Picture 1 (tube, each protein chain N blue to C red):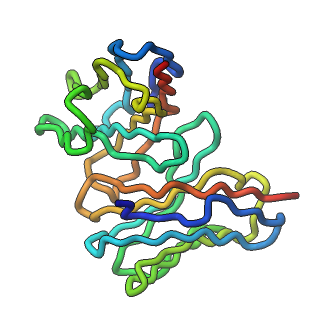
Picture 2 (picture 1 turned 90 degrees about the horizontal axis):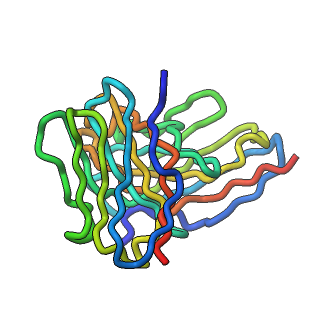
Picture 3 (picture 1 turned 60 degrees about the vertical axis):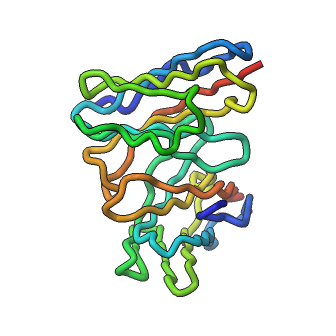
Length: 115
Length: 112
């Protein structure tokens, strides 16, 4: 079956603009995660969705970042008024259920460059 | 504050030999540990995991060892193959939690 897909694969934007990143999880997976990887760093947790529960937003670095998951499937990560420090690879992952013991399947990521 | 550390940015190993990748953690609450492998332009893929109730888990050529008292885990790959060349990430979590905390990764190069 299809894996996790993300779009766009690359995005270059000017400082101050808003961007939207999209994630299509594996069908049937109830848990969805967003991470980002800055240059030379590990993956940093951003936000987690599990079914109809309230999302865990504890990893979002500022109020310029928001995410939604519509219909328990597709998710969109929005970054408002982008800054140069937002440049990173943004990775989405999904898993069957929202426990660490369930394997997280990652998409290929969106490389965001803020100029 | 890095809770999961991979102190070796890179490792180079000859094909057929053992690769040992190390990882240290500081949060004693972590009780579930995972290794992910990442090729360029792809997302990370799950490799192997271990619960804190064990000190070893083996899957084919891959073995993960956990030393809870030292807050240290390692991934052994035997024998190493050129296709194993990738970035390896160590991650930690609460077993019944959901967030993974990742290390910065180690680039493994297996030379043929």
